[in-house]
Length: 558
Ligand SMILES: Cc1cc2nc3c(=O)[nH]c(=O)nc-3n(C[C@H](O)[C@H](O)[C@H](O)COP(=O)(O)OP(=O)(O)OC[C@H]3O[C@@H](n4cnc5c(N)ncnc54)[C@H](O)[C@@H]3O)c2cc1C
Image (cartoon, rainbow, N blue to C red; front, side, top):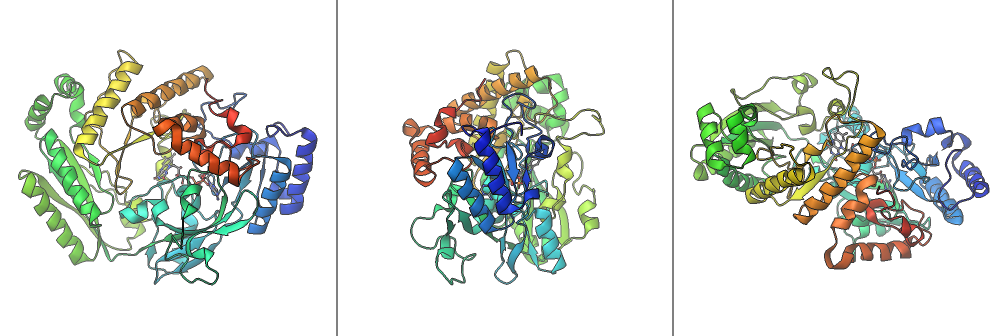
């Protein structure tokens, strides 16, 4: 036993482990440092350092009663716990806890799909159900339903939702918290609670109506530390008959504004799935004169280069779910809408496929659009088919077989869903780079927004090495960490807050949400102290520290 939970003696921890063994079975209490390895964050910037966020042990309950028993034991000895479902939260801390020495509660053994109703389009699952498990279940039972999967399919419905994960299909489904409906939760005192209609004994509508009556606390469990969720309901998308895509391009930089307005209109009428924005001008950055114009946000010059190269400035790929006829009608409508404000927009028909698609269609790599335009759509996620394909982005590649990105972190700022807000964010992020690394050159005027969330844009500030291969020495990693902290602060000063963060940066992000002297954090921590007086459940998660550990806020800042 290499590490002890903070504030717990070796003697007491020995007793705790014995009691855990009695509760879940001896082989399901993991203490050997080698076996603890999978509970580390491989991308941690503190990897192998004395303060790396590693657990002291892991315990794997197989039932709700066993989770309750673990929580009660932890309360008696004031042992901090950290619950994970499928534990694949890579880019946001992996399975690692916020507090070094916590005991990981690994819920992988609770992996049953408890219910799927094909007619009401609902499901109820346990924590360990991965996207791949759920997909297999729907396939095996020939159910005409779709999941909205995260890009790397080994994660799961519940864990992803509890970190406010997002997907790729229609808005209400790709916002996974929004698609969730009804939870069963083990509270920090070991008691069992159901939210929504689940609180009404014998209700048959638990997965139909999420609110029940009175305040609905279900939002507290995502990015929070108020309970261990042991069942979660979801609304699933019925399998559409047809999927169709189309590409719209607009010639000038400023045409981006009406383009976004048009896409927002279709999005909020639930006509399209996730739209994918990008700029066909990226290849022009190798031309020094264009690069200068892009760095200076010189719109007239950028437009001149775009016209001379025969490329439009922006493109958006649209996807339509429905029947063959309705998807065609909606695509025609989209073309009509854009031409009302940007008459010289280009519109190219893309894929038109009967659903469910076949594996061969998913794997097909043809690009439906004429050069110089190309598709960035990944067919698997748009069809709810989980894959591991995107894991190659931080992993080894053909270009880089001997190295992988050791510090992969997702950092995405929430930006208002308008063209003006995107243009402001581009300038702000470029300015942050200029101030953080004087002399460094970063062109952000072509950075497109991501519309993973139905009603907001996310923009990544990828310059700071969150997805590139960097100096992987311990000192190099600490340097990057400091830099990221600085960047988060500057982004926040410009009004851009992050939607999610790994434990190492959660205090920094929570610091940004400071309106009225941190009224939000004070509210959350008042609740935390009332519900979890011993502070045993995921201390520090979401920047919420219980009284027992509050002095540790920001302790990892170097
Ligand atoms: C290349 C790449 C692509 C990615 N693409 C996406 C993407 O498309 N969409 C996306 O959303 N993310 C994406 N991610 C981020 C992340 O890998 C996924 O969100 C992943 O699904 C999260 O892991 P998980 O599902 O195993 O959740 P877990 O790791 O099980 O849970 C996440 C966190 O939620 C809390 N938690 C989990 N279970 C419980 C519980 N039962 N009770 C209380 N708290 C709990 C814990 O704090 C836990 O750390 C990507 C990452 C990489 C590296």
